[in-house]
Image 1 (cartoon, rainbow, N blue to C red):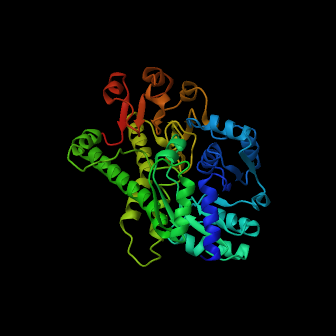
Image 2 (spheres, rainbow, N blue to C red):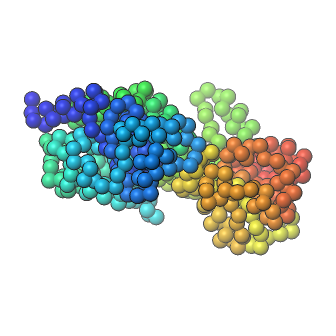
Image 3 (cartoon, rainbow, N blue to C red):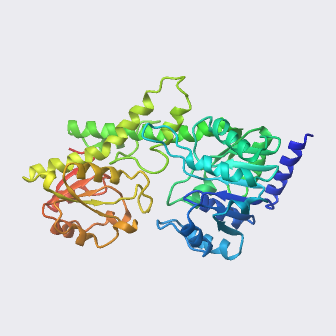
Length: 444
């Protein structure tokens, strides 16, 4: 048995017995619940984040997220009070850590190229304090080949240590979404991609403590491919739904009825259409997958799907303009109420919000925009008060609060009875009965 295998065996045994000292770099939507869950099952966990105010909030036992996240606030209070989870901004506190999970943002730039500033910074900051024999697992979603081309060189240079001799490396991309963070972490399968098969098995020993679903061993590139492919697959399917909805509008059909009938055919599952695709993952992960080709394959479908989905907020803006024109008004002089700014219902997560794109379209055409969102602090307030004096309303997010809207009261607050429903949460018949000029995605 080599020295490296002896070190890896030790880490695996510590993981199996919940005795490994664990660190989580990045305490956002993924890192924070992961850290709390490992602390819950007995690990001593140190969380690292660059935001001092977030660190203070976490150490006080409070949840820094404002969306509806079942069980997270209570879990954080428990594990911080017990002392099993502690947060810091100081990487020096990681000198004795056996296993490090990296959960930092991995965006793409305006040319759809990966921007790994946070990932490289994490590796450069971790390297000088990296314990010999430690296992580092990247949970962030990254382009295929990133572990080999970015993470490993950065860690080796910063630490002076060698992969699979002095430290071990893996990729285990998260599979979560806001509103279901803890449930997804427990119930969604994970791909444990290791730099060696033995590393993958050590990762499985760790994640078995918090994951009830399958834990599949793989190499790093397979793990990277799997995560980016599953989100690209969803993006392409949403794009088909959106394009079908546009065809239904143009031809006088009802997308929801067509979708219902298509999905009666075995093996068909047309998704819902909407005013855009948001969140941290789906708008960027298809580009990460495409980047993995490194120019050695022609990529056509992914860019086409991205173009369809990115165009939807502009289409919503045009629906508003069309209804205003029918009322003898113009978008350039209008005041528009946008209902919902988070990208996901009952969440405060505004990353890549389609509503932000809609606001830009409306403002760019001269309109004044008023935004309401019951979950996003900046846009909270009385809905009817915000509606007063607006010329039209647009539903962009299917928040629970919007599903029970008092349509008559909302209409009474607006200058014109104009409603655009980008999420199809209002019954068209009810809207017509209430006297609205109503348009919806996928409905003429």
